[in-house]
Length: 115
Image (cartoon, rainbow, N blue to C red; front, side):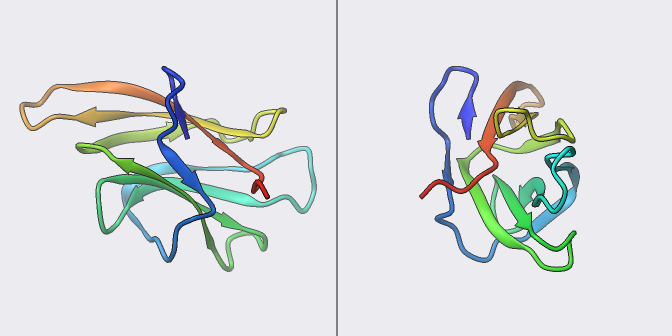
């Protein structure tokens, strides 16, 4: 994942057994490419991180794709339902603070695994 300021905040393909929590998040896929992977982005059930899962069989099974660094409290995770033409999963979330404020962050995750 790369944030708006261009700083890398996510490791792709280096995570193990993540699961999703809460009800916010989104699915994305390359819509014009049949048999493409389906991606699901949300919050990690075990910690305050954004995670991305990937499915090659329309959601029957999932594997870990990417995970971010810890954030305070990710809220209102949303994004584009279609992977961009150049291969990115893009979205935004609010990182809420204990005082009730927060900042909105934009992110992008490479859809294809890099060798």
